[in-house]
Length: 463
Image (cartoon, rainbow, N blue to C red):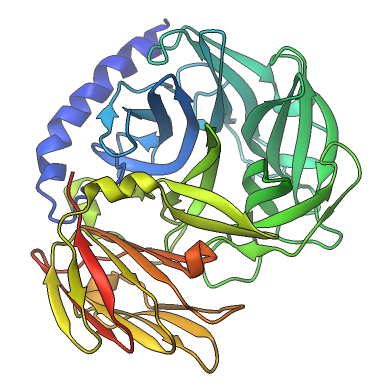
């Protein structure tokens, strides 16, 4: 333990204690989602299950609700529903991570939790911090009790990455396959092309670059937060590309990958993972025979805001989602554990209005065009003729700068599932082939629902 670690370990709980009452007083404080006690949250990190305990780490700025120097926050659960806050796991307290312990992943083996992350360092001087003046180091922390960090070290410095890259190389995702450890890193080249670097290792410490995955033509200037996995025989590469045409500031989607990620491969058609305002940097992990995923319910550099800032906190993670596939299409749905939160169901007839708890689940099976109005401030509609879905804020206060998002479906919309919390909506269409995620800010109290063109069932949700 160095002096900086000691001081941060003492200071962060003090800041959290001072801001806890203010954050708790926010009427838009979430009930069902992982959120920071104070300050800022972004990417989910280090997702894993150890025994009966789920571990979720996240990018955490305890001192600044608009961002700040990144730590790793940490929560645990035995049921994916009730989350217990743990002490901060990673502090930016070493020369190789002094300007932020950036995103990464976890691997649990032989009684040790291995946390791989990016150590961010900005050098003093007049640099652009893109082509020069910045280090994004590959770092490793270990823990025997999965709570307290025992060791930290730098495995690869920025200068040791392949030639032709900018300073932006980050977000390691590590896994074990056939006796070899593999890692993917997101990267930006000096020619402003996004790509994913593939590394291999036999001991988790010595890494060698074995391949680079990218598209034949440029597709954005940076690919952040890569996630590469096999699901029922098909490989998928998930990335958050920056610099592509999309409705949000940055994209978030996936490519089917054919062939061998270690050698010859082909990427299929890129598809967005979400059509809403607030979804970025998802990460997945295996949980028995299923693959679960969390995403950041936010967006970097977004022009819209979150009123929670006035209460000293910002952002949350999505509800855990199970990933399935239908051919080359990824399907996302809330983890089945959600059903344990359901209260007594209520029918929502077509054309009728219903007042419900701010935390609710809605399910419908439309046979044509429909529209759902939530809290008299947001409308989600589907047009059968054009197969177009539209998420539109009709009340500027509810959107806090968000306006509308639209997508065209590949197939008619025949299922709708909505998961609502105090200040978020997650909308799953066609069993999760299309998803819209957004923060929203209704007036405190019960929420009104109006469904036109279809009928549905609504459950109140509570822990």
